[in-house]
Image (cartoon, rainbow, N blue to C red; front, side, top):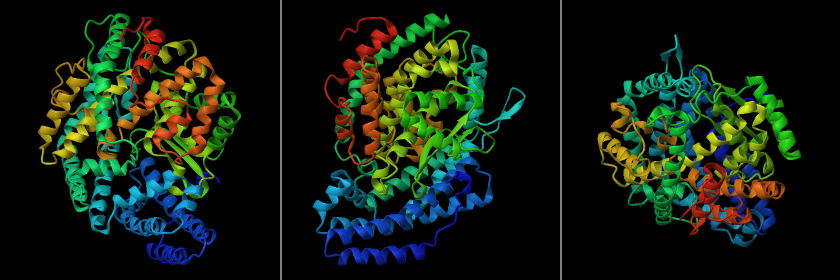
Length: 563
């Protein structure tokens, strides 16, 4: 089915509730697992329809935040989505209280059973009203980003459209456009402060109503971290601080030499080569054509996947007025279709985002026959392995997009990866501090952010920009507002993806086959189990970072890594 043919209709909560409760009653009466599971299958058909309608409303709202009719539907889900969690809770309780634990684990996996147990820990009817408030605030944040109209270069630009100026090979234009970009955030600083302050407080109330000391423990449960905890993450952050930051300094020194700059400023962060603004050599249609050629040559499976996405319209990639900021991949389970949302703006990010989100979408395409909602999409730490590995697995085809600049793209991409990891540490530690201290004022939160920047990114120079100097860079980071504790997953997954990058240099076909296998498994396995199946080392394993840093030094900097 084409995306344009798939129609949205608001479900009737009462009808859905009645049907599922009836099926749950039948589950409880089942004398054998076959009968029990038959009802699970019927319940999942209904749950997948509900999830599809919810996803469709959210997706259409992202595509056009000014569409009043779809804004009303998005508001409906903000308010009624938590009500559907009550039904899920009944379903989960029936699963864990049944006498068929062994059969359930055999069919759906032990990880599924653990996910159900975690889902029960994160919800009670006592927090429904708070969940509605949380949803509403997240939508307000989305609208704040989408509402940007920045007058630059003689026209009004949204946030995505400003990227091409901020990546200009002209340093003065980078400076001016970056100032204008952040001026937008500063102009409504009080609104960002207010939304975030309310989010912190409502999440703190939710956690305490559920019996937790603060939102941190609940945040880990929401993220379904079944095998590692806060102390593991603290050790990982410490390893990055000790071992990874020197690697970034090496990259920065190389960049300064290439650009002829004595001191890097914040508007130099994403530029690596003089005279090259990292713009793809292809226009929109040519980019899609190049991507099609790339995925057909990569493998039979990826070729079929990309044809499916293009022919059925499951991508909305070009930036436009009133469109939500950034990019993501989502899934419409009822029609077994991934969907890629992005904001192409004729920059490096077009290709980077396409390959990243295509990694998510390919995983969903490969595991589309899994009808259990809890495991057709993996936990987010696993999800990012699929996406970040796809970015690197497609390196051999970058000439299609960047022509003679393909090597510059690869080195710029690696530099982006290297700098991302310490930034992830800032986001993660910041959120631990914020949610352990919900009484902090907006000014105190910003001060904490700036302090952490000096720990993990000590080279950061804001060139006298008072707004950024006081700690407001994170206003644009949607995960901090909408997906607390998500961001460390990027770093954990990137460590895995870099191992795949190393392996593919030795045997590309074997590495690709291993990648395909973990895509097929979707959410059947936990993070550690997925890493093991992919023949990778856990980021929490001692010495893991050392091996990766050594390979990056050798490939990119041409030096022998000295521990």
